Length: 336
Ligand SMILES: Nc1ncnc2c1ncn2[C@@H]1O[C@H](COP(=O)(O)OP(=O)(O)OP(=O)(O)O)[C@@H](O)[C@H]1O
Ligand SMILES: [Mg+2]
Image 1 (cartoon, protein in one colour):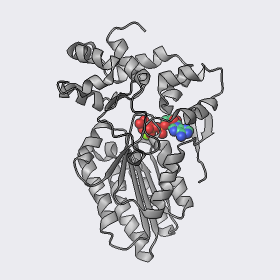
Image 2 (tube, helix red, strand yellow; image 1 turned 135 degrees about the vertical axis):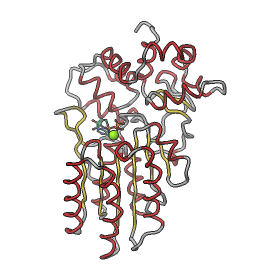
Image 3 (cartoon, rainbow, N blue to C red; image 1 turned 60 degrees about the vertical axis):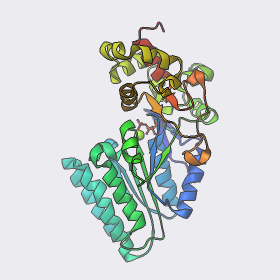
Image 4 (tube, rainbow, N blue to C red; image 1 turned 90 degrees about the vertical axis):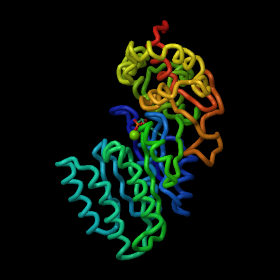
């Protein structure tokens, strides 16, 4: 599979690095089709968007007609052989960019694939990145059901079909997981060796890799943020405290539990841990809760280790990155 170009920071272009297992999974889906829509979730900045873009390109290479939707970045494409469908899609994108009715575009994919298949049997891929925010969380499950229908009850037959959806939205996971309409799969930060390859693409001077690993836990988005502040982790933490609304009020309300969770996130797995706090931490994308068994089959790419206290990974609960944990620690008033 040809590797796409990605930007790890403005002006720093690299090719898509590592994630070999995830790419092998794409090839497998391409061969067998996805039985359900695959809904991918994981820490913010772990590389979901980069992976979906790489998957879109790879599937095209494997002979697929590919629809790609990423409303948050205003990127839409129909890499399809049928010129009529291509121009229909382009018209719709133009209109949607004017009036911002993203839902219409997301739904148009259903009609357009039908249009393509009417003419002849083909391989079809629909790749939707962060569409739930655009169409509304309340419609997320219905949209996934629509995608499932496309797989299960197509009006015209396809040769094979791959449907991939990513969400960085902590809540949508449970919203979608409640139904049996999707294969909900987690993706973790990058494994150490792959992450090191990425780190080495960054023009220096840079701190030693070991240090960067301990801050980021292999999260490429966090790598990029640190790089852009010239490795001023204090600034990144300060911004995160604001973004995650770690206000004095929030901290005062949950101090006891937060102090425990900073020491060991698994504390939140205890039966008396307050549900409201867990919900808040998930919604704010600070932790991953109820993490899957670490068997390859459940994961996009390699699963995280069973536990890694230094990186804040517990068996069932993990901080998204060590910097996320650090933001909470600092909000609690601990010295850096
Ligand atoms: N395998 C990779 N090789 C090279 N760069 C990568 C890779 N994965 C991610 N990146 C880069 O790391 C940054 C964060 O990745 P990306 O935006 O894909 O994460 P994300 O999980 O989609 O984040 P969000 O939760 O914010 O949507 C981007 O600059 C992206 O280009
Ligand atoms: Mg993304």
